[in-house]
Amino acid sequence: MDEPGLSESDILVTVEDENTLVIKSAGKRKREDGDEEGCKYIRLERKPPQMLLRKFRLPENAIVSSAITAKCETGVLPVVAEKHPPPP
Image (cartoon, rainbow, N blue to C red):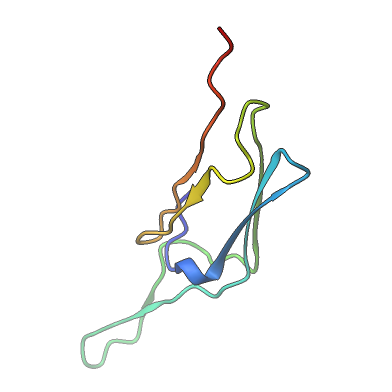
């Protein structure tokens, strides 16, 4: 997921009902004001959402207890969920 302008402390990743990954954020995005003297514009890549809420269904063989990791880096949130190995 990419969310430009949001930091790691603005995003909450949880698991509901043992198979639903929930990503929430109520944080405000930071904006870049013009650097130049006399500049009167603001630059945003996208319209900022009031609240971010995304839900993803995890596969049945996902390890939910402790094997889900997420780290926000420069507005991109990679989420990794490990799975049980397939039965022989």
